[in-house]
Image (cartoon, rainbow, N blue to C red; front, side):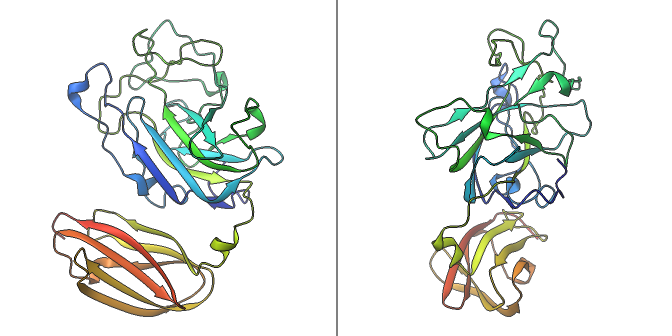
Length: 303
């Protein structure tokens, strides 16, 4: 599914990452390091990507819960540069944030010869694994494919977890599909961008927003890039037209800058280059119609 499909009604708004090693067979290389949690938020291409590394995980949540509607319910975007260079990942979902159920994955790719770091995978031989398609095309998932579990309400999915498939056919590191077959994909990928490169998750069937969220004037706060650079902006969405005050303060509560302007409903941004940041931690608050939303940012370099 292309990222601009009208089927998508929402995108992930929060992401927690647990990095995996660049190469699990050589842990001295350290962990994957490309991107950060904010890079998986919003639509593909809005931010960057976050690389999970061998066996790394990303857990994402949304403005409301996902339900099992007709056909596909959500799609996961990876940033492959071709139709055959496919880095794969398991997909799990939860309706309580604690208990996760995995989609039953199938890999019919041969597992006798290791696919090397720039090798090819035939997408027609895999199912229910994220990463089947090139950048800007999401791999869709149908909640009806999940096994029945008393720990899961498939009409109220609150979290989606992406777990990198290591891709090695070495018995020590191999990951397996639902049939016990090894999942063979490009490995090792000994770069900071190792493993599955998560770009976004698009939601197709979203439950109506709860009352608390509907009452919010300001939502979807994202700072990108963060840590700050001379390209950093504060992205946000408004439920209606509003005059906003933007206040930047340090960790001691000292105000270092303010900005006020009128903004229309929908997606908006504020250029942060105009604020005088020195290295440190800051809090940026947006205030409008008596509503306040705050986000943290970091400055640790020159710009």
